Image (cartoon, rainbow, N blue to C red; front, side):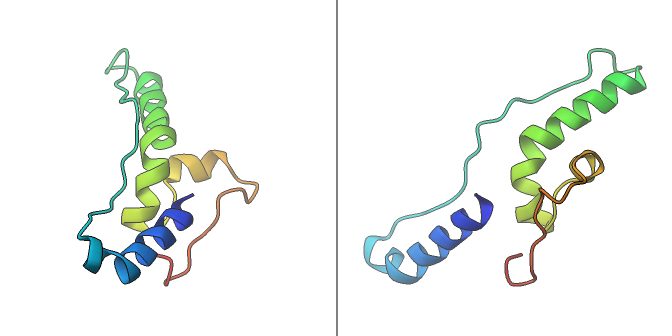
Length: 88
């Protein structure tokens, strides 16, 4: 999905933006998470995992060129792609 969006942005900017004057960006509908008990390591870790899977899943590849560590620690079977320098 991220690579498809990047290609659509590139195509729009190269072929249509000058004529149409439009702006294209990315918007994600996400839920924020805070720990139920900020003193509990388990609650803090759970909130961080939720944020990784709801927010960072979309934005980390765009800003950092990779999926968040919280995700890659759990999803180890190759389902998360890596990005080439050109894709980043």
